[in-house]
Length: 136
Image (tube, rainbow, N blue to C red; front, side, top):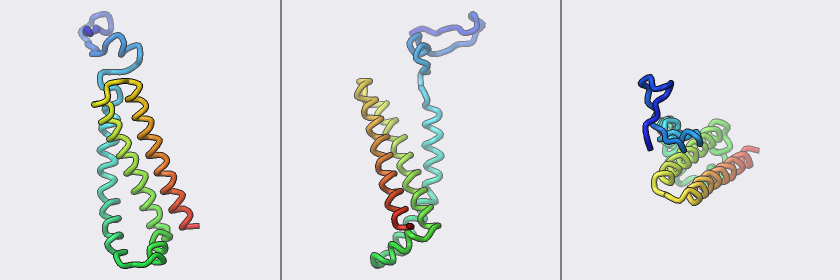
């Protein structure tokens, strides 16, 4: 893999192999986007997890009806859906980075990434349907 001079050799270097240029992939692919999304979702999870922990502690000893009434409240339902959605997005992004770093076979890597994304999507849909059924 050599350094390719851009712009006719005017001193600007691109650190991509010929295959990387053909595929449109840089050395880190979309690493910056993943890095930022991990930070954004981490920051978003802090208040959501604190809210959930306080709510869960408040529901200790509560019965089924009290728990359903808690989830049925519109603010709590929205916060719960946000928590699940942001958490699953954070989970999928984190596992994707781990898979990309440690799984060498490209087919297995792609299958694992798509499997994680599909599982997170299915879990998110189940959670959304469950909350929406309580509200309705």
